[in-house]
Image 1: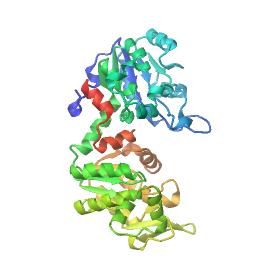
Image 2: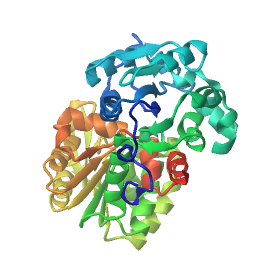
Image 3: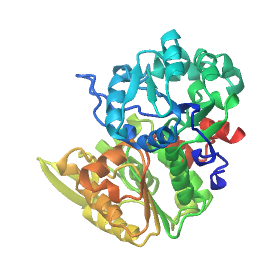
Image 4: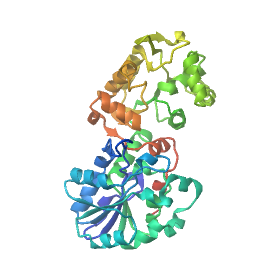
Length: 413
């Protein structure tokens, strides 16, 4: 059993000559014009477990999803994924344009020890799309009658899950096979959980959270947990998250910036922020200066002089310097959400400065979330971050204290 995770790792299994069903998450950004993969980070992250099981003589079959009904442009075949996996793993990863039909089952039965086969996109099945999950509430024990499960399960000796980034999904491929087969956590899953435990359950002190970006609801879920459980010594806010706390403390952002918060329906968080400021005033930090654009030139001002007609698009240099000092003295640092609009040079200075401080921080550093990882890749050597999470929604829910369906299913078995 992997430490306090209560999940069996693949170190505890004998897979030689066994038929192994491995659920990975290689869902990748797709260029809507060409239909080709734009970033294969998740594909490369999945290699360790795939290579390990193959080298140990498993008859290895991979399943994964790509896109969704809500992201139809990305709902493509996994053929290109197989090619990229072959290159990354260093051996041929076979592919079949089928998932659980007669052709797939025949191919599965013909696999030899050490061989690898990727089945096609799970999201081609209704039972695997998010809208089905939202509309039909099924318990894992009820999912045995799902087409995917009843067709595939009889052909395998065991199940391995390495898809933490989909851990918040209550889909058959994520939670049902554990009811029928001996189940194990893959290398990436265990590594992800150990990193997250290190920042939530036993962080080295001081522990600092940097929460920015525009996903205010996600940030407030995390803030509630880390402050109520005293796992964070400081929460450094920026982006729209920081703006909410500034408003709660009576600071005027100017009509242009406040309008965005109203339009996104985020005013409801102001009262919550006011309570946090009252209860944890010594732990919550918000910007002391901000940046905006005037006639194509970047300008900075203290927060008591925010321009009424200009959109705030970044933290100022004083804030970046103060936050950087706090990060430099931290033993644990978690980052989610960039401080500014990092895509444009004029509005990326604060993000670049703060991310470089995290990059050189002596403490244990963890970064997660799509925009966070993308912006780190743009401004830093991301390999210097101790752990970079592949997850989005699953990461936020875990750090907010929500029990994830995958972890519940794995621990039950």
